[in-house]
Length: 430
Picture 1 (cartoon, rainbow, N blue to C red):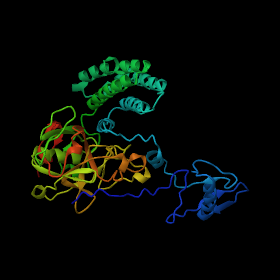
Picture 2: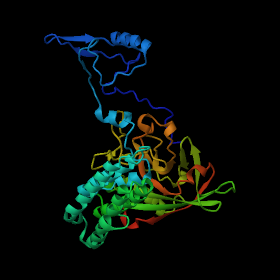
Picture 3: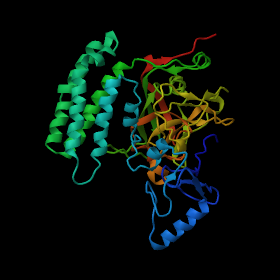
Picture 4: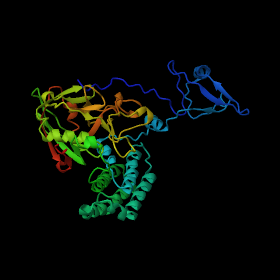
């Protein structure tokens, strides 16, 4: 089978300002003596003996601490600041829901992105127990409100002419609407955490609506050889799956009646994975997944490999790194070096293509999986051990409660592209 999620992944990093010693990694620590310009080299074994003596008194972790009696000044090399922030910080801001990941992936106006980031920070502040920093939250909303008002012309200028009228209405709603910034600000002043959470979600939905109007297509050019060969999705699309129990049992949706079928909706993101999402959307419209059997394996629900439906071609691995403007092809990301994808795998209900059986530089043209992220099985920073290794192209937005109820032998009764048909671009026939 083409999918194997790796059972273990070695996060063997050199931590910034923290030195970890092992039999495999004995590094020399360069200590610059305070005497003249001379430089002393203290071997790892010496520092290890010092550490053992300290640990015999009390467990310690040396982090950003200068122990002048032992080492006057330590100069650590190869300090991966980005990796440090991503992997070791308890406040790592990796999207944890499909909605947040999709929102962050929209290639919108810089002012709108600043507004979005400012508001997204409030969701992290809301997690603080007991006394919440309402003053900081209020400052964030006021900053976003000022930007939305002062930069109105710039924000609307990024919207195509035919959508500008709608954009103006959405912009007004963002500021003054029931689910807008003014309402959010008032709930923060009232220090009502529940209302803040509800109003924040509504405001961010409005932000995303306005950003989508600013992004009618791809913001980069695809490599010519791929543009001519593969379908592509130049925006968003939504696929609706009807899943049927293979053993005659029933699904138990939250707030619904038990049935032997259940509905799942997945939003495809062509902004970050145009080839992968386009290939998948094309297969859906062709009815390729109707009747496909599902298998549960490790932390995933895997479709069958297509068999006779596999036409023998492969789609290149496609991953857009955070902070970049176009995807990388046929290469994985190095999470150890601080690289993270725009569409992370570390989200419950992420949808990705399995690897090609012959080469991990390519994705299977047919076989996909739902990823059942579990923080208990994740690595440092709550990041999946397989992060940056697969072409993630969408997220489950409806029916996440159904995913854990799917068992081996269940069937995709139907898969339909219910939105985004106008974004699906097929290659010209030669």
